[in-house]
Image (tube, rainbow, N blue to C red; front, side, top):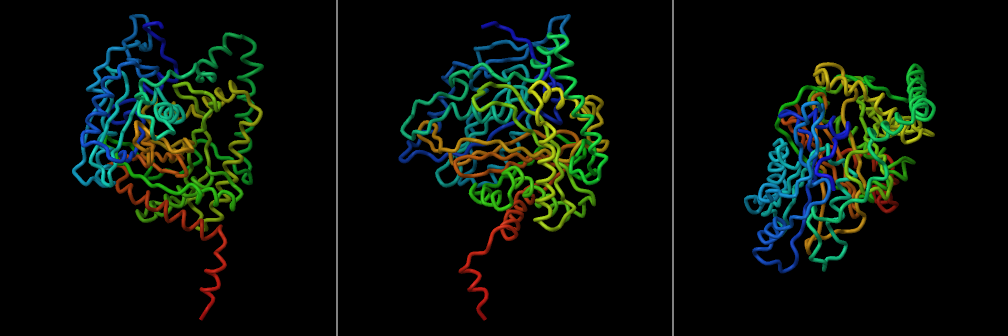
Amino acid sequence: MPSKKRISINEAGWLMMDSSQRPMHVATLLIYSLPDKAAENYLSQLVQDLREEAEFSDPFNKRLIKPSPLGLLPLWKIDSDLDMEYHVRHLALPRPGGERELGMLVSRLHSNPMDKERPLWEYHVIEGLENNRFAVYFKMHHALVDGIAGIRMLQRSMSTNPEEINTPALWAAPAATENQNPPAAKHIGSVVRSGSNLVSNALLPAVQRLGQLIGASMDEDDPITLPFQTPVSKLNARIHSQRRFATQLYDFERIRKLSKAGDCTINDIILALCSGALRRFLRDLSALPGEPLTAGIPMSLRAADDQGAGSAVTFLIANLATNIADPLRRLNTIKASTRRAKSVLDGLSKQSIDIFTALLMSPFSLQAATGLEGRTRPVFNVTVSNVPGPREPLYFRGSKLEAMYPVSAVTHGQALNITCYSYAGTLSFGFAACRDTLPRVQRLAVFTGEALEELERALLPEPAGKKSRSAQP
């Protein structure tokens, strides 16, 4: 294995965005229940054992080094001599630690920027959680991982067998197979090298599709949404360094029933819940715009068998219909918008989708490069992601994984990020926000529950028994 690796344009982009006010790391909060009859020193022994596992798979062994005098970008250096007491940390909540105390601790941990002199990951074991549980907060720089890759990393380090106590540490799990779907920079580079194929096979279809998209936006009856077709809102101000974090957990079957009843996707229901919650949240602050908010929706380009690290996503922009009071009309507007957004990519090759995404999101990149984020009209108002996770319960050295929550990054002009994970029959929401720009984000989390109940009343038939009882005098 070479001791140095070139950094990709995609990775460089995430690193260039990173600053003390907007650290570009992402994280997962994992909640475990201790094994039955676990020894009193179970967690301290676990931490000690983890620190002794010094075999590192990609990307846990990559550290940034400065470029050569003629180089423009830093390089990755393969580093197998890590300070494991730095990377694996043991923390504790005051007993009995509740969800509020855990959320406060995660908010502080997520506010801290990463040390770029070291490999860009941290693993925090947190004891003291009530009901015989503990937590793990695992964070890694976004240059190294996207949501799908992160979930698959975690899954490789756990087992479906509760009796398996020798599962490897996350960083020592079997190395990922070579990425079968390289990131955009590699795709574009390979197409460029093929000369005329760039125009005929990738660039021209992408440009033509963008032109069609712009033309469609002139039709008032077309539900397509373009960048900047969105109001300025409280979500789109400049941010500061401190974060807030809130969670919600729902039975996935409730979401599936609504999806079936509404003849729409799971993603559409998630967007509808976020829309209803944001409408209530901003209305209570007397800050609900008259125009509908829009969402940027990352969509994975990974094949089901792609275990590679790195980031491989495209973006859709959808209407959240926050200006509509009726939940069914709101859902139908969202459904029409997302279907139309997805149709734009129909028939495009992977290379063309990469180029199309780069063109579509170029205003966002331009705002970041010029420092105009949060000072001008946003490209869209909020990022909403849905990352599918394992369907079976998982265990780590005898401890059962009860729940997993995403802890995402926010940036200037995007003071809120909402990400969902599905796992073992549940759907978890993670709300990451700037503490100063968007206070009281816990209320937003609660409002998703109200939006869920509202949709259930609107979409699902009332049980017959309940109807007959309510009809009695």
